[in-house]
Length: 80
Image (tube, rainbow, N blue to C red):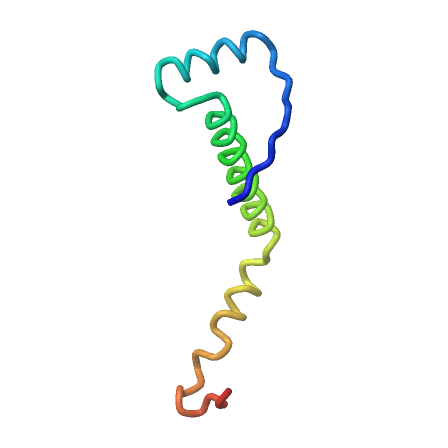
């Protein structure tokens, strides 16, 4: 994976807490801690988006679509 250098601004208290995490060896350095934080946030946003999209689905029509072909014998299915 290629990386790019960026500059960020943090409030002093956040930076102190970040440095404590690095000092206690929870992270190897500031950069790694921030990379992991951004990655976790991105994953959380993706999961929330999926949940919101799933909530929009009509359960009855989705169930009907899922069961649509179940009454047909497997031998009667068209070849692809």
